[in-house]
Length: 502
Ligand code: ADP
Ligand code: MG
Image (cartoon, rainbow, N blue to C red; front, side, top):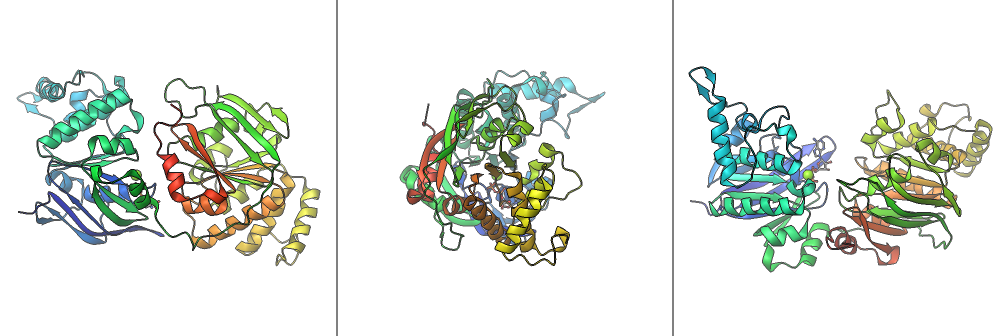
C-alpha cells in the first residue's frame, strides 16, 4: 500500500487567460493535518476544487491509497471519501441543523422522511464533539462559527477519509478556533487526513504537521512545520524574481498633502478597520499591502464616505474634510476606482462590461462632472505633449487605439482635478500589456502632482510602483516601509503579523 492517503500528481488547470495550476504535486498522509499555504491567487482553492470534482484538471492524476481515481464531479469526490468545506458556507438557513446534515440523503421511515431519527442521529454526532448545538435549531439562528461546526459535522458524517477546510477561521473568534482545532486533532487521531488552508502562521504552528507551499500556480515545496522557520516559509511563498516587472521613477517629495487619522469603521462586531492613520505626500504613490481581508478596501471606503457610522479625521491641504458620502469625497478632490467587480454597485454605471481597470477608469471619468472647455485645453496639451495620434479632438475616443485612448483619458482626468486618486487592485485580471499602460498612466498622473493610493495584493506591483508602502493586518496598520527598504519578505512579515497592535 502507498505511503500516502492521497497523491495529486502534475495537476494542471487553466482558466481563460490564466494558468491557475501548473504541474502541481500534493501528497497527504493519513492522520496528518497538512497546511496549504500561498499568497492570494497562488492556486490553493483551485487545487482543492480539482480534488472535490468542481473543476476538471486538463492534466494530472489523483491517487487514493495508491489507486488511481477519476474525480469528474462532486459525487465522485464524496464516493472517494473526500469532504470539502469551502470558503463560502453553503448551509440552508431556514432548515434545521439535522435537515442540513441529512440534506439530499434524508432518512426514510414507514411514513416518509423520518425527522425524529435524523434529529437523533445528528444530535449524537454533535455531542461527540461537545458542541452544545441543538440538532433541532434552525441554522439561521446559529452563529457563523456554529454554522462552520455544523458544516464540519456534516462533512464528517459522510465518513470521509480526507477532510479539506478552505480558510475556515477567517470569520470565527479565538475561542471557537480552539474548538475547531480540537476537532481537527481528534479526527487526525482517528486517521483522517486533513488539508488546512490558512494564511495565519501561528495556526500552522499550533495545529499543522506538514505544509505545502504554492506560488503563482506552481508547487514550491513541502516541509515539516516544526522544523521550518517562519522566515523560510515566507520566502517560499514570495521568493520570485522581480526583474521582469515595471519600475517607477521614485519621487522624494516631502510635502504631506493628505492625512487620515484614527479611521475606524465604527462597527462593534466584525470590525474591519481599527484606528488606521496614515499620510500621503504630493505626487507620491502610496501602496497598501496585506492579505485579503486585512481591511484595506474597507479603510478606503470609510475615507470615501461609503461606510455609515465610521469615525476618524481626513485632512487635505491642511483642511479638515467633512465627507458624508462619495459625492462629498469627489468634490473635495478625492477619486476612487474600486476593484473591477465592485464598480457597478458603487457608481451605478450600467451596461458596461468592465473587463479591465482601463475601462473602469475611462467609464469613471465619463461620469465625472468635467468642465468641457478646460478639458479641451488640457486634452490638447496632452495630445501635443504625448504625441497622441488622433486626426482631431473631435474624433470619438472609442475609434482611437488603446494607447491613444489612454492619453486622452489622462487629459480628462486632469480636468477633473483629483488631488488624491485611490486605486483598488488596479491591475487585477489584466494582461501584461494593459498593466504597463496602467502603470504609465499612474506615473504620468503623479508627475502632474496627483497623489495615488494603490491597494494591491500583488507584491511585485506594490514593490515596483510604490514610493512608500503601508502594510495592514487584521484591520490595523502594522508598518510602513520606504521604497529603498521594500522587499517581498519585509511586507509579508508585516502582513502575517498576528501580534501587531494588540
Ligand atoms: P488562492 O485560493 O490561492 O487564493 P485561487 O485558486 O482562487 O487562489 O486562484 C488561482 C488563480 O486562478 C488566480 O489567478 C485566480 O484569479 C484564477 N481563478 C480562480 N478561479 C477562477 C475562475 N473560476 N475563473 C477564472 N480564473 C480563476
Ligand atoms: Mg482561495
